[in-house]
Amino acid sequence: MSTRSRISARISAISESATLAVDAKAKAMKAAGRPVIGFGAGEPDFPTPGYIVEAAVEAARDPRFHKYTPAGGLPELKQAIAAKTRRDSGYEAEASQVLVTNGGKQAVYEAFATLLDPGDEVIVVAPYWTTYPEAIKLAGGRQVSVVTDESTGYLVSVEQLEAARTERTKALLFVSPSNPTGAVHSREETVAIGRWAAEHGLWVVTDEIYEHLVYGGAAFTSIATVVPELGDRVVILNGVAKTYAMTGWRVGWLIGPPDVVKAATNLQSHATSNVSNVAQMAALAAVSGDLSAVAEMRAAFDRRRQTMVRMLNEIPGVLCPEPKGAFYAYPSVKELLGKEVRGRRPASSGELAELILEEAEVAVVPGEAFGTPGYFRLSYALGDDDLVEGVSRVGKLLAEAR
Image 1 (cartoon, rainbow, N blue to C red):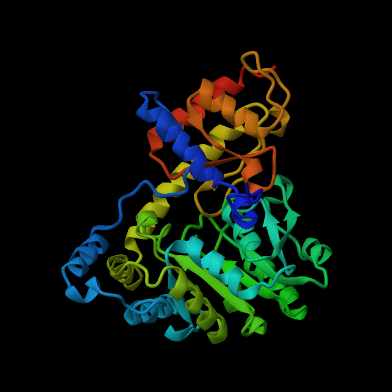
Image 2 (cartoon, rainbow, N blue to C red; image 1 turned 60 degrees about the vertical axis):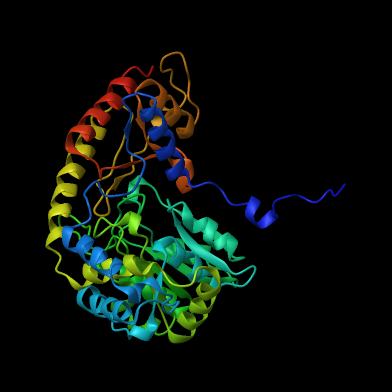
């Protein structure tokens, strides 16, 4: 009998998406009749705007879209993405520099698969989105984490980045606004980080999917635009999921230098071929339209953001910096670890999150999933009433901590 493992070591090493796992457990409990409120999944609670849906319906009736189309994306969508990027961030790119992907996750994976050789290092700021480590690992790369915390609002400094750089460092992953913290780097900070990367000949992979979700005095800054010194060593990741409430449509994209885009397109041609044509035409309507629907959603998120942060900071033992972007709060719960709550003493944020789900019927994602134990991520992309009820339940339970 063979002693070989049934599953490859490469795939066995992949961790389940913690955010999707928490969301699935919350939905299962809800289906069983429990009144669970979920703060886990990072998706807007709004429906996709009607004009986008109508574009998809029309495309479904068009025989042209019943066939294979170019693996790298519909030419008209690639052109529209280039124009949208110019409009929203001032970055100049040709349609030939765009690769349309099956959601933002495929863009993340293909970027690293195209850039990295085994042993190449990528500097990643923690807390980080759960998919980044897995994509880097699958590509044969090695993640080097630079940990930030609530004392700086989860912002990273050039000094921290330089301390993490080695002769094997090939790329920096730059994410602003950030998932999971909502941190947004200022223009000055972004320029400094970009110039540091350019000085050392590093690639910058920048995930800009939350570009339109910034609040208060914060402003989105594209590192690719404000640091022209990066030249052809920058790759932009983006998609329609968050801005247009289109998480289920699965359309993302990668913008980069021609050789990188050509190589990534070759990879996609063998992995998945083209993105669904109907979804691509919906995305074309989204990126070609105005941003009025986005403005309405942003106003609602801003209101919920302020409510959530205020309520979380009223809970003894919880400290929550104000997120400036995306739709997440990332409070520290370190002071509560080891304290007794209903006969249990959770020693980690993972154990505390499990207790909250069981006792308060509220789902949050523990910081272990994002590389920084001792924290929770809560999405405020849910209805106002559910938000208040959910945080109230958490506060009532944690008030029992002794």
